[in-house]
Structure formats: C-alpha cells, structure tokens
Length: 466
Image (tube, rainbow, N blue to C red; front, side, top):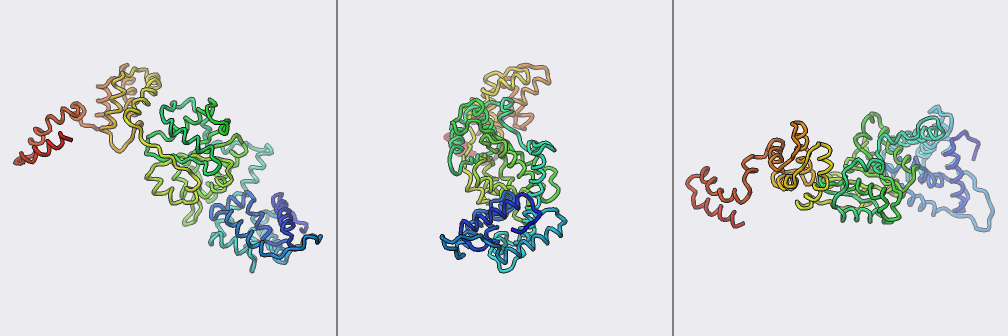
C-alpha cells in the first residue's frame, strides 16, 4: 500500500484486505477484498445494520470473490493493487482533502468505494443500502467520531462511564424493590431461555400491571443470591430506559450514538451482561428520521447477532401486535414468554407478601380481610386494569389515607370507601354482595320497566339459574 497518513483502523483494514487476498490466492488486491473486511469493522457494521443485514452482504461479497481466478498453490507472489483499488484510494484521498481531515478514515474509504464505476463492491454496497447512501454515511461518520471520543476517554481525558446515565444496573438496586412473589414458572422459563445457545433473548408479553418488570427484578435478586445456573452466575442486568435515552436527542445521529455508547460500554464491563428493555415496542421507529429505516431495533441487530450480550424485552399484547411484530428481523431473535394475569387467589398471596412493606411505609396495620377484599373488589369492579397492580393501588391508597388522617388500621370498610372515592364505584354495588343483589333483581327491574312483567320474570330466572 502507498504511504498515506491514515487512522489506525484504516491501516488495520488495509492489512486485513491484503491478508484476505492472500488467503484466497488472488493476484490483485481489489475493492471486494476491502469490503469483505470492512463488514466486520465495528463502526461500519453498526451503521450498515440500520439498513441491511451485514451478514447477508458478507455472503454476497464472498460469492463475488469466489468467481475470481486464483493463483497456483505452488506460485510465490506478493499481491498488487488492482486498477479499481488504486482508484478507490485516489477517490478516498480526494474525499479526505475535501473534508479537511488530517488522516484517511473509514468514511473516506466508503465514499471512495461508492464512487467507483463498474465495481462489484460498489454495486453490492449500493444495492444493500437501497438508496440510503447519504444517511448511511451520516451514521458512519457519527459512529467513527464517537469511537474517537470514546478512545480518548479510555486514555483518561474524560469520564468513561457516560453511558451509565442512560441505564440502571438492576443487580445494584434490587434490594429497594418488592420481592418477587409467585411467578416461579415464568421465572424458570426466563432462566431457561437465557441459558440457550441460540435465541437466548426472552420477550415477556402480558397486559399492563401483571408484573413483567417485577419478574426481571426477581431475576436480578436470584443472580445476586447465587440461586441461578452456573451460566448466569455473575451476570449483570442493565435496564435501558427508552424515554431517558431519547431525551435531548435533537440532531440526527445523537440517538444512535447513545445506543452504541451503551452497548460498547456494557461490552467492556463484561460479566455476562443482560440488557433489559421495558416497553420494547418503542424501539421500532425510535431514532428514525423521516422515511428512513433507521431505528433502535435495527441498531441492536449486530449485538443480537454477536450473542455476547443477551436481551430481555417486555411489552403488551396490543403493542406487540401493532408495532413489534412488524420488525421481523428482531422478533425472530427473541423467545416469547407469556405473562398472564394472576388469578384472584394468586393475587391474594402476592398482596399478603407485600403488605408488610406498605404497612411499614404508611405506619398502619392491614386487617387480613382488607387484603382479600382489595383483591376481590378490584377484580370485580375495576375494569380495564389488571391484577395484581390494581389491588396494590387500593391498599397503597388506603394506607396513604390513614397516614394523612391519623388512623392506623386499614380494614374492609376503608378499602370500600377508597374504591368508591378513587375508582368511582357505585356504593350500592359495594354494599350488597352478589346473592343479595340477585334476590332484589326482579323488584329493581320492575321499578324501571313497565308492562313487561312476564319478560322480566324470564330474564331474572335465567340470570339466577346462571
């Protein structure tokens, strides 16, 4: 290669391209050899992953290289630059001069490659990008610039833990959370999926409030208490908050740089990392610009493919069907685990396990019948919400009411009052139980419906029989 002022990564790429040429026993180093090794370069791979599967491009490049005539095995030689490779370097140097850069870098090489005519490398790359060359180059430049900043940070000029602002290590905070009660089957299934070789990324799907996030906090507790298989020992679970991650990303590339910074930071931490993404459906379209295909789901593909970071996602059935299922490339890398709403009896057990925390916090005592009534009443009268969340809200609200009004006992009556006040449930409905209401059903209907005595009788009998 000619003497060129270049970055370390470009120098490494040139050497790898020559090695690739020698391995295939080709006479000339060509742009296709460079593209073959570029695909595995970290910044190029991440930027390309937004638009196209890098591994599919690698397959196509390998197929093109297999068509090139090889040198005899007994012939000793040193490969030379092909005409197209020389043009690529010339074009790249022009791009470097136009950008006033001091050293030749990966974006300059890619621009030089895209400007080639009658080149398989240029054609395959353009075809993969589908007309998104400008957006791709913008992504690549952002990644390379961030990589340089991150390298400077590693040398000690700045803080290396910037990425921690956007994640929470659940292992360090599980003691501040409610203990996981029940859900043994779902937790065991999650651990089993995490221990798989392939498709080892669990996806928790269930209605809001059924305990999807609590399940992951429970897993963090088990890891810290060393009650998991050897493969998960020492794993660190990082919760990625999409809202925090998107906040302040005013310019194109800001969001993608943050995602890359987080993933690279977690990789460097080691410790068998697991990334938990609540509301994972928000990934689809997050960070997108206009009609481009850029979003966080595509950004994660290279990391999902590499397999050194495992992911746990959670979403609702509605959001999964509306958004997440459309991103097929992501869906096929996750194993769905359904998190069903717990039954009334299961919810009673859960609330009894949690009542001490709420009692200590509000300085009150919960009567046993209050806990059971909170579950049964919320299940019966609070619609469009799910157990155990809606029952937990009731006992928490009742505890807060007692603390504010100088009371220290939460009983069934108070739960009923809170249900009427907060949830707007009819007091008559709460006062009478089901059997009492059925006894007076005919009388109450007849007081509102006139001239239909026989029809009312038949309806009431049918309801009472049911």
